[in-house]
Image 1 (cartoon, rainbow, N blue to C red):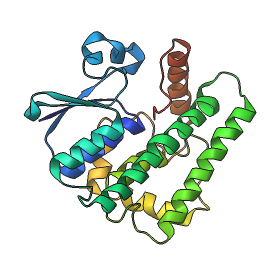
Image 2 (cartoon, rainbow, N blue to C red; image 1 turned 90 degrees about the vertical axis):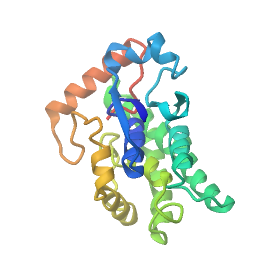
Image 3 (tube, rainbow, N blue to C red; image 1 turned 180 degrees about the vertical axis):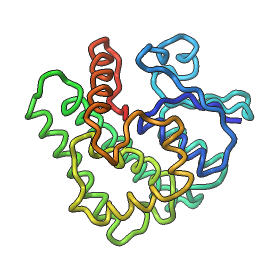
Image 4 (cartoon, rainbow, N blue to C red; image 1 turned 90 degrees about the horizontal axis):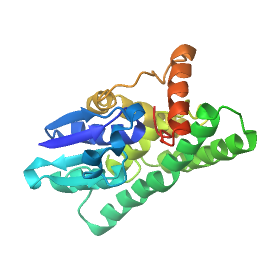
Amino acid sequence: MINLYTAATPNGHKASIALEELGLPYEMHVLDLSKNVQKEDWFLAICPNGRIPAIVDTDADNFAVFESGAILIYLAEKTGKLMPTDAKGRSLVMQWLMFQMGGIGPMMGQANVFFRYFPEKIQPAIDRYQGECRRLFRVLDTRLKDHEFLAGDYSIADIANWAWVRTHRWSGVEVDDLPNLLRWRDQLRARPAVAKGIEMPSSSLDLRTDNDAKAKQFADEARKMLETGQSRTGGV
């Protein structure tokens, strides 16, 4: 059994999508980030960084794993699925996973902060991070022109990148002129395990529609968390 400690953010949904795709039994524990539960001692014993997601594998002597990318690798290697075992195939998956961890996630997270959460609009910062998101999206679009998935077969690299790319509107970045990225986005969204994974837990926002009232409420909550020294740059 996997105990999943999570919240409705792109990083959280990476873990739940993977668990659904792999068919692993898991129990979900939703942390209220607005109440700083992720900084409590009991959770810091699982995740020293005080961030979600984290897992505890009760079938492996309660082995704890934190950092969403590390969780994806652990689950893939545990099951022998969603990542090749040969050196080149594994490396290819890892390259595109690291692309998300070091690029897509941080840049979209900062775009969220400056575009949605900061009380004052610092346009150079907004332009900087939205522009970098666009550049990274173009890299994905180019890759997907001649590849159905990012690293050969469907893998944890697709899950990691998709969980963030699907939230592009929240970052204020449009992708209508990136046909290959759109095809891939919609193709993954149609997978039953992916559709279920993004509801585990569900977000208060439907990112496929515009709802100003819900968006404002969500942004206000995130802004309060930033003001109190908490972080929700990935919260969608």
